[in-house]
Image (tube, rainbow, N blue to C red; front, side, top):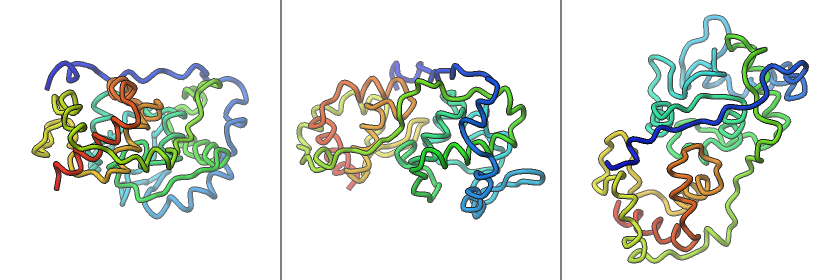
Length: 236
């Protein structure tokens, strides 16, 4: 599948390691325990936790994505794990804020937690059940914001499928037009808006895959729209 297969995802390590009092500044674990009640319908945590609708969340911080034995993860999260994604505070914060923007095919049927303070509380609670919470890397204080809304005017752009086909040569060097999955997820037949949002998530460095960030960064809004329409039509 070309040179992209040889590139391994490098997740940038956070720069704050176990600073005194940092966990309290990042969130209130007791408040997070209350917020977890909403998660408990699918996830369990603590002594005796087992996989359910979602994987158990013990040892979540510092764990490779899609690593819990016996749980059937989505192709997207499995690929991220194979590429080396390790859950830290910043990446978990992004995922909880907008799961579908982080990994389009995630099976987590949750719209996301938009309140940053509540996310910090929830993650502070989950840190209690990781191996060594005091030494788990946190998000860097200067980490960029994770708000990832796409301007409606961008979503309204009418893409040209013929132009999209012309642009698609680099995409199909890895993503197969017949829809087969060979370690890289298919992209044909996606709803146009989902494709556009995903590409802008890479373009804005919301999704942590350096190759896709580079590829999306080269594309204009019109070019992304054209690719979205083309790949949608291919899958029909």
